[in-house]
Structure formats: C-alpha cells, structure tokens
Image (cartoon, rainbow, N blue to C red; front, side):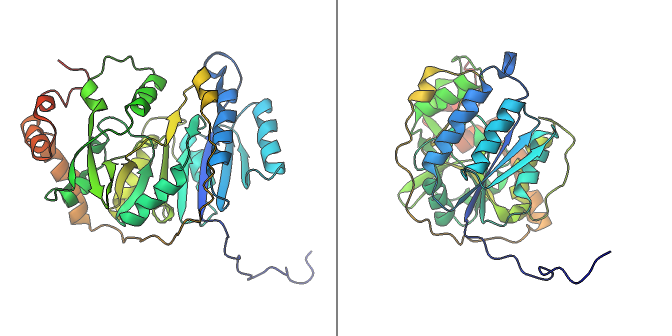
Length: 341
C-alpha cells in the first residue's frame, strides 16, 4: 500500500560542487604472502592522496572483496568525511569495481588509480594544465614509462606527424622511471637509452610524453557515457585494454606529464615510501570546462589506429621515423629493443 506521492518525484539532482573524481578499487583479502604489506601501502596511498588534492575533489573507494581490517579502515575514512563515496562488494574484478565507482557521478574529470599509488605534490594541477593546453587530450598519465607511444596512440602520432612539436625529448625524471620498473620487478638490464629520451609533444614552453599507462591516469568523463557494465576478468585479460581503447572512440589523445608526479609502490613496503613528504597541498582553484569531442569518424578511426599503426611497426620505417623526430643517432639502431643487443 502507498499513500500520497514521494516528495522527491521529478526533482532534479542539484549540480555538484565537486570538479574532479578519484576512483580507487581496493582488493586486499588478507595480510599474508603476496598481500603481507598491502594494507600499509594502501594507507600510504590514501595519506598521499589527501595531502595533494584540492577541496573540490570527490573520492570514491570501491572495496572489491577485502578483509575485515581493510573494511574497518574504509568505513572509518567515510565516517570521518575524508572520502565522499564508499562502495562495498565481493570480488567482482578490478575493472568492474572501477566502473561501479565511475557510474552515478558527473564530474568532468575522473582519475582512476590502483591502491598502491603514492601521489606527489602538484599532480592534480599539472594534469589540469595539460587538459587546458591540449584540447584533444582525453587521458593524462602522471608516471612516464618506456615506449608508451606504441600502445593505442596511432591517432596522436598521425595528427602530429608533420609537426616539429612531435619529437624525442629528454627524460625529466630518470629516477621516476627507475623506481617504476623496480616496482614491477624488472632488473636493471633494460636499455638505458630509455632513461634519456622519450617521444613527446612540445607545447607552450612545456611538453608531454605520447601515451599513458593505466595504473594511474585521469580521463575526461565524457568517454564513459556509453561504458560497458560488465567485463569477465578479475584482473588482466582484455579488461585492462578497455581503458586504453576507450579514448580512441572520441579520437582523444593519450599522454603523460613530462615530469613524474607519482610512484608505483607495488606489494612490498620499502623505507623510502614513508620518507616521501607531500607537504604542498594544491589549494589553487583549478579552472575547469575542458573541450569535448564527437565520436570519431569510422574511416578516420581505421586510418589512424589500424592502418597507420601497421605502417610504423616496420623496423626500417620506425628507424626513419626516429631519425626524423630527432632521436640521437647513437640510439636509433637499438631503440626498439628493451634489452640492448
């Protein structure tokens, strides 16, 4: 039985005061073996986030089947008002957890991050600067990595191929690169030329690297308006590729800040992680209202992201491309090789 009308029927949701959402899925099922340090690392992640964001940031945490100790910590953060949204679920997979967090909110930018990211000062401000300066950018990473331009970046390369602003630029933080590859278990036998130059795009006395990783990156929310509701992998498979392909539908570019603005901590705690100090909170108001794009023309999509990419994969042609885009001649021969010959 129902009497009367719900007083909120047909009432519009008021416009949010928040401008930027951060979504972090959390899966820490125990504190043993692989996960022995994960809770401590997650706490460092959250402390670094709180210290480096402006006050119009909306934080969403998605508990993806974590243990009771983690659940208690998450509930505490929510009750204390440190985060704005908390979603509890069983382990439904990392990407499904992310999609739950993204849905139901309408902020212009959404940062998706793993629970082992150590945010550094000014990451949010520098991200917004890139979106403002380059309207065609749809994704901004904050941790440079090797050879990112070879993954889902055909449109960026095609659009800028004949411009001098597309060229190999010096690495600004070799330390950041080294720490990233240490964190994912690589030894240091990789080609050291990757610590010196990366393919980038110069603009307004600044620069970005072409391409972006996906363990921490900021996306224009527009590209999620037709997002999938379910992916059938807990981790890996084609689920991680989903976030890489999504920007191409709108012909958005994927780039990364020139400098390093976060560290990937991995699953093993090290002393340096607690020694990093985030002591400059970004209090400056960020001007939002970024340009949006229409769905890409199917022919142009195929030309840029299928045909053109195949063309550049040729070893001979890639070497010509490297020379044209100012990679030092001494590096050209072995630049395609992660492990130098």
